[in-house]
Length: 319
Image 1 (tube, rainbow, N blue to C red):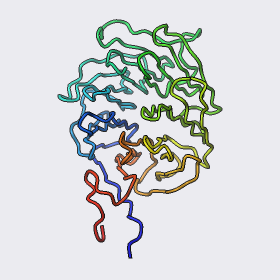
Image 2: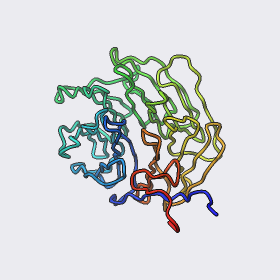
Image 3: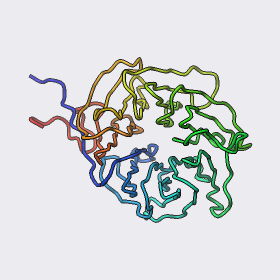
Image 4: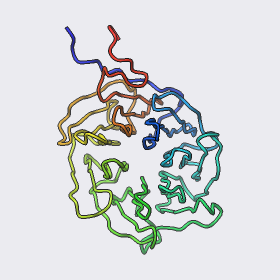
């Protein structure tokens, strides 16, 4: 008698402190992709699509809160509690440039052409650095007050060539025209935004705030936002990039990873972490999702347990 395949996550060790952020590269030409992780140990790690460790980026002197890969995965950007953002060469692991800030950098984003870096953090400001002229003064995105938000900027994403989106503790998500540096539009949540990630394949922003998870058109075209209230406060959420019929979440109030139908129905509760789950994201091919936890580990979970993929070799007896 065969039951449902058991969900067996792969554990990716190496970090020594809580994992704060995870981000996958887009699918590369050969069908593979990379995973980059941020950690309070200050040492972001790069991994193969299988979860195997490639290398560690050494140079920050404080917790790293955000790391993202460029479209072609040749560059990485990181934001840290050491008041800097850095750009790295992912082949050599060498830092290419360090950009000073006046407070903790909470989020970074590289433009699709790799020409610019967008940063945000506890200064409540958003800055754009020109990677072609890294020593030049950055441009600053502000409304009248001189600030981008009235609270810490929790997340920044870059959409297309000309749009930056920032999300803050003030509950606002703001779209900026990066050509004019002016605010285009904004969306208000009743609670501080806890996470915001760009789902490139679905062309949506996935935002968590309080007990709300919202799937928002990446560009404000007037298309409807799909918003759900969950029975708990998610720390992070990610929509399946191809099926678009489900999303996964982490939570700060327990150690579980949850799979929900797009209508909000809870489909699975997955146990494995030994601390709250800070971040979660689907791989670009939708075959797995990665979770990062207070326990210092990254776990990789299969979308279809029992399928042969990467280091999972189908079903094994007693496996």
